Image 1: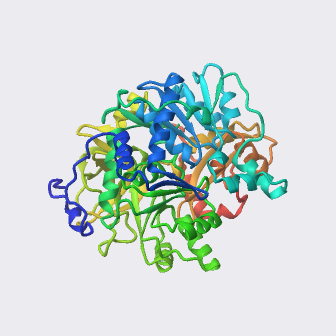
Image 2 (image 1 turned 90 degrees about the vertical axis):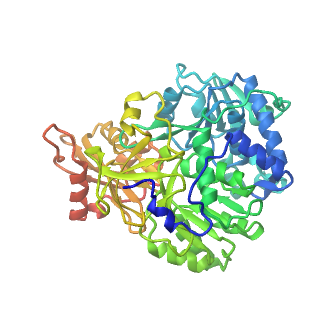
Image 3 (image 1 turned 60 degrees about the vertical axis):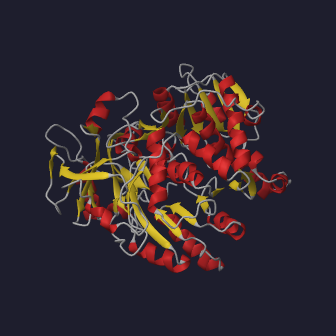
Length: 576
């Protein structure tokens, strides 16, 4: 393909630039600019409690000074183990202001999952939800965390809600226990309350600042295969993707948008669309610690959303909930779906309910994460993932020889090059070399086709990752958990398609002599080692597993057999 021509730009919506220049500066500069411009405007809203941009900027400076007192310096890794809350935003930008590196974690991860990541990145300070603090304190002594900052989510709520949570009734007690711990926190590592971190004087304005090429975030991903590894994302990578997102939606009104953060910000998709993109346009960011239809519809009465990034199941549940309640969603002009395929029926239902656009985007953690999207306008093409973002180049190549481009219209592996492409995997030079080719091309592992207008259609995945609920699951990780059970001698894990989009985790197990299949026991065993979304919904038994000549399990054949045999009905159940 003649990359200079970039045929896809002719399909851009009116107002989207055909060329793209990465903004100067860093993510710290991005926030500073919004603080200066929108100082009195609401930046964050949490259960109705507002935080202005001016107060956000002050809190970031104070938290940065507090982190410096804990020994955080340029290049230090700081682990964030937090749901969506104001403290998450403050901590993120405070770490970056020092030139340190944010490492995001899912607070629902098991001890084993957290340990693997902490061993890998070597963070010395962890800022964690207080309910998770005991688990971080209990990490082995050889993990170099010296200080744990405990965050109480309730403290960020309005006074009326805090008082309601103290009522001596069962419902209030259960709600309080879901949001914070009632136990006294102790442990071998230094324990610091978040409120104490904010009691420091603001960081001096002359304190050294990060540069555009500095690493901003280590975002863990399973990449194309195997164990999760840290994708290195620089300030320039993330700043570029936020700017590409702004350019993609020409109807945005800076300082007047309300973005709903229902996506977890520890996920690359939520991080960019909420932590950076929303802040860059001076939006009001309404934060939800977890997705709940009732909470979202209640919040929409006071602060009607205008921009909603989410995944298909969220759109479906919100549209159904609004119809049932008679709620109005017509304030939402723009909705961008990602992380899993978007069914046309979901688009039809959503757009009928809102009168706005719902488009599908495509990306990976390694592309910060968005690399392509459907135009927000009449040129969009449902069933595709759209066209490359401004400033992004793509090639379709022979997966066996990525130096050979495939002819137009013929499926092949998608390569991506652009300012949002990551710098490599943390401390994994061999895997970095395999993923990043000469010229800055990133191998996605996705098989796609591209038409003459540049629209991309996902055909298959070389990688065997399972995408469930918008999250990546590495089959090998689930297989390791299953085979650790004394009754299982072998296992193969695959993804089976859901009718509504995405995949369910399914497992085929070979049992030890004399063992019988006990699905509930195996799921319980997996929950001790894996986050709930990784636990298989389907578990079936087999005498043996299909293998290659060298003994490798052929997961594709396992998946085909399950689909052909209709085995999803056997041993199924909701593990979430």
